[in-house]
Image (cartoon, rainbow, N blue to C red; front, side, top):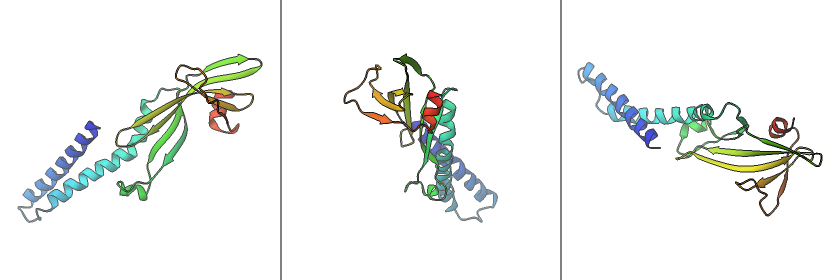
Length: 168
């Protein structure tokens, strides 16, 4: 976050400095109020750029075998440009590193489900799961890979991307 804040200030300084240079080149014919206006627009411009580039930047940090399952675009009051075209600021993925078990004629796949949120600090949440491919059901696991009480079994859509990638 400190690097993003530093980049915002630097972009404001650069664009404000460019406006100051334009005033000097025009021999003070341009009004001086364009300096803070240009600096503010530079800062907002960098924020908009970072908001839209965040998703591609985070995808580049994922391992090659990672599979993105879902993306969400939302609008935010503090990002007015997002009302025109919302940026992707939430996505879910699995890293592709799974363990497959054959037990009693059932195929069980253990995997880690990740959620990435773009907020003032990026937030990554992870949860271990065991997926029963024969019944299309999954159950949460602890971080050590053990079943976690209460044993809540969730059904998985067989036509969904998660089931297709892990069970077929």
